[in-house]
Amino acid sequence: MQEAEKIWMNGVLVDWADAKVHVLSHGLHYGSSVFEGIRAYDADGGTAVFRLNDHLARLERSAAQYFLEIPFPREELRQAVHAVIAVNGLGACYIRPIVMRGYGVMGLFPLDAPVDVGIAAWPWGAYLGEDGVRDGIDTKVSSWRRIGNNTIPATAKASGQYLNSILAKIETHKAGYAEAILLNEQGMVADGSGENIFVVRGGVISTPPVSASILEGITRASIMDIARAEGYDVVERDLARAELYSADEVFLTGTAAEVCPVRSVDDFVIGSPGAVTRRLQEVFEDAVHGRDDRWAHWLDYIPAAAPAG
Ligand code: PPE
Image 1 (cartoon, rainbow, N blue to C red):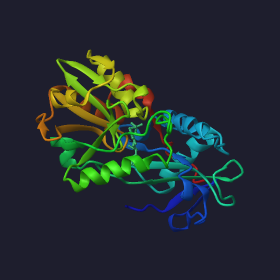
Image 2 (image 1 turned 90 degrees about the vertical axis):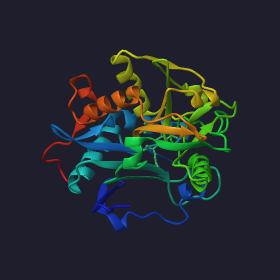
Image 3 (image 1 turned 45 degrees about the horizontal axis):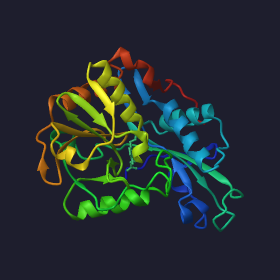
């Protein structure tokens, strides 16, 4: 990964190499951390964080699911994100806040463990490759099922649940595919290892509902808003695996992946990126770069002289 200089840890900016936790930290042993993935863009009016308030709100919801008390109010975390970007002199970048159960308590009862908060930012390019964003990616349905709603809440973005995505990712990578698609316990389409999924057929855009064991993606919500504003019908409904094979277009959305066309699923060729995907990619790009007034409220600009602390 590309390093930056400073990381915000528990209220102070420390050198990148010094942002450490103890090897016996609770979060390391049991996955009892929650985190966010956020992007900032070189927008027309300066460096802008995309939907920062919504990401911090989700971080709070994720923490609450695990009875994790974040020892900083939202506004302080927002200022910390600004400070991390400013002090590192970053423009477009990826931001990773993490709230973790720290060192001091072993065993599964976690509520007596301290809580540590870190926020890092660094440049991170196209998650599924520049080629992927342009030409689409080849995907495969994993044999691993998405964790069920009554196993781990998929709506919380907790570290431990990513073991599920990691198994799917390794399996499909070894088989030669760029991304895994996971079905849920009911056998319906859930999401990608780190993205939500959309299907276009006959001009209608469909995406699995929150009840399908998906992460309630912020890019997903943005794309649904954009698509409706562009005049498309958007429905949230359960999708059968074979609907992916017969789709006119399939695409993935996520903070890291942004809007990425899918070229094939299980070797069924969907084809080159279609007109709907292209249009949504364009409007999304305009929105994140501050070129579309309809979505200006999604951008949180870094003040020119943000305090470095
Ligand atoms: N589903 C999953 C399982 C997921 O991890 C993500 C984000 C999404 C959907 C899309 O959510 P949103 O980013 O709010 O639109 N995945 C994050 C982590 C990627 C990583 O490799 O780490 C991300 O995109 O930041």
